[in-house]
Structure formats: C-alpha cells, structure tokens
Image 1: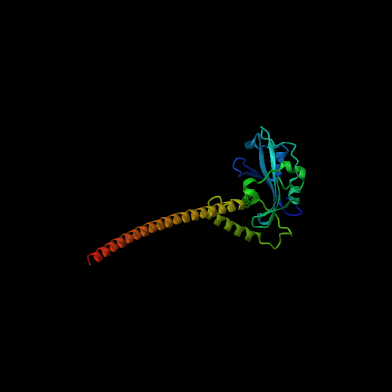
Image 2: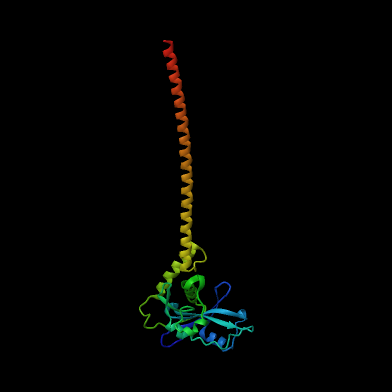
Length: 250
C-alpha cells in the first residue's frame, strides 16, 4: 500500500479463452511471480492478459493498467519483465466511468510511456468499460480482504452509497438482460441497435403484407367493377333491342 495516497495495489489474471478474471493477487504476490519465487502453472507456455489496479476508499478502482505476461513451460514469468505498472497507472489518461468517477487507464493504444505499449493489451470487443467493470466487480467482491485508507481527494464522497446504487443498477440489468449483466456499454448499444433493426424489419414486412393485401383487394374491386360494367352494357343492349322491336310492331 502506498502511504502517500492510501491506495492498495492488486493484480488480476484473465483467462485467455473466456476473457474472464481467472485469479486475483496482492501486488506483493505478483512481485514474487516476477522474481520467480512462485509460478503460474495454470498458464504455462502462454502469454497471459493481466491487469494492475490501484484501489481506494470503498474499494473504488482509481487506475488500471492492462499488461501481458510471458509464462514459460514451467509456469515461471519472464524474468525480464520491467513494466512500471504504478507509474503507468498514475500517469494514464482518463478512461471510462463505471459509476464512481473516471478510471485512469493505460492499455495498448493509450500508453503514457510509448515504449511500454508493446507489453500492454487492448480491451477488444468488450470495450474499455466492459473490462473496467469486470475489474471493479472483482475488487468489490474483495476476496483479497483489501482495506485501503481514505485520502484527501476522496474525503466527503459517499463511495459506499455509490457502490450500493451501482450494485442495484447492475442487479436490475442482470434481471433485464440475463446473467451477462456484466456486458459492456458497446455491447448494450449493439444489442439495442440490433433490436431496433429487428423492429424496423418487422414493420417493413408488415407494411409490405398490408400493401399486397390492399392491392389484391383493389384488383378484386376493379374486376368486379368491370364485370358490373359489362353486365350493364349487356342489359342496355338488350333493352335497346327490345325497344326497337316494340317500335317496329307499332
């Protein structure tokens, strides 16, 4: 924990296949990995997506760095790892706001130190907000027993109330759109746009069906009118012939 700002530091490892958070650790445990005093056996012989997060009052995430780890066949992290995670988080630009203020985010494509960008990864289809939301939810579950201290920048802000409000909203989203209430804003927008497209298509289909039905009714009416006109002409001809016969007899 940094004594100057009361923030705690954690590292989260993602499952490369599903993109879900696979494991969580305090920064001291991560340092043991870097110093090859511990292993990531479950991720041996792979490149792992991980996230560094600085956590403040009410377990609110302040900064995030999305970085990669090269793990060898024995589960050891590459000893040459030298990404200054805390420095990147402190100097990162503002990222998404998932309910408690904008989170500073360093990732591939928005790295404050360009030569470290090659060691970072991008959020992908979930978008920045989706990744930050997963990290924030994991921190709020607090499996690591974090106890960050309040500092002057957050005094007077009722983060606990914000967390409760956000959880209530998240529960409502989960009920509305299913277990993937952790979907990102871009996914919600895409889903909403897809629903609008479906509604528009159904409207167009219904309109075309109605137009075809009206055209068929109009054609039937025209045919009936033609038949009536033909019958009228026939009766007029018959009446004229009868009148001519009557005049001839007189």
